[in-house]
Amino acid sequence: MKRSLTIAFIALLAGCSSPQSPEITSSKNIGFDVPDTIDLGEVRVGTLKDTTILFRNIGSDTILILSQRFSDSEFKVINSTQLLIDPRDSERVQFQFLPRIMGPVVCWDTIQTLYRTYVVVLRGTVIPFTSLANLSVIDTINFGVIKAGTTKDTSILFKNTGSDTLQIMSQQFSNSAFKLSKASQNLLTIPPGASQSVSIQFSPSDTSQATGFDTIHTAYKTYIIELQGNAIPFSSIFKSAPSVISISLSGVIGTPGRDGSPYTFLFSYEEPVDLSHDVDSSYSFYGSTGGGDVDSRGEQVDGWSTTTYIVTTIDANLIIRNLSVQFEYSYSRRGGFDDFSASKFLKLHDIALTKNGNLYVGTISSPSLSEVVDSISVVDNCPQDGTAPGYYDFSPPFNSLVGYTDSAKLSIIIK
Image (cartoon, rainbow, N blue to C red; front, top):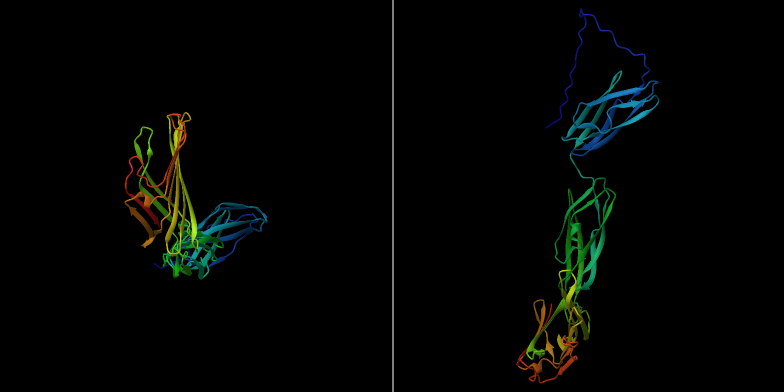
């Protein structure tokens, strides 16, 4: 679609016999000063162009502007179309131009005052849209050297040096070792002249040099940041950082209950770990849980808690040289009756860890509990029946335990 301009000329034929109408004149001293033509310059299609016209009253009488009418619907006044301008005063009138098609523009702004009509010609050229937003960002990010399985975050600045609002629609990473620290920063709106801090994370899963690209898609342009990083083994023991250690022990039968029947004790533990030492070292882990029941009024009735302490040593050959586990359990009832038990297992024999994918697995199955567990101790404090606390300490062989099972399994998984 092209713009078209039609100008109609009306010729007044002379020599008509009908009498001419007398010209209407006013004794008012009206002095209205307004530009004849305003050049809008180049305007991008689909964008708003705001323009201000200064209306000046250079006369001695007040000027009343009744209306303004544009010959092109793409123009409109954005403040009042009716104005009262005092002598020697002025008013600024704002209008907007929102072009929808490209090409030259000529529009008449017809200004109707109380005594006279004035016309301002508005000219310009509508050009194709080009975004004036501009993203200023570094070309390369080097994360340096970190341990495999760990993470490093680096913040960079996204700055809009253009005159349009910058819309970032997405960021795509060519290497899974790199990602945004906060997923919400995948979509950003940055006003002209403003900046936004963006955090990128490097998370290498293996020991190698990593390179990649962060492709930043804006509404009208694409930007690319080159990403670099290098990963070394996490430690002399583990190439990549473990996150969890899981220990379980089964086949241990505990002390008799108060009614004389045995109860089975199965131990299971899984918690986050830090195995970042570079030499043979002792590692300590701790985990606890708790819970309880409440009555209809929301008051605590019964409560329980468990606490587990682990101490172990792993050498550079992935051999667990010793493992100490202490498990504490307490149960409280309303009325002041408490039960408390503490069990301690000590494994002194070597346990070799075998790498299986991203797991390190050590398992011992034995027909004899004595080959897996060095000792068991159980403390039973404050029994509910009010009898004295009981203490039981067992050393191999364990076949004196009531209900003893003649097999055991110790499992350690580091992942």
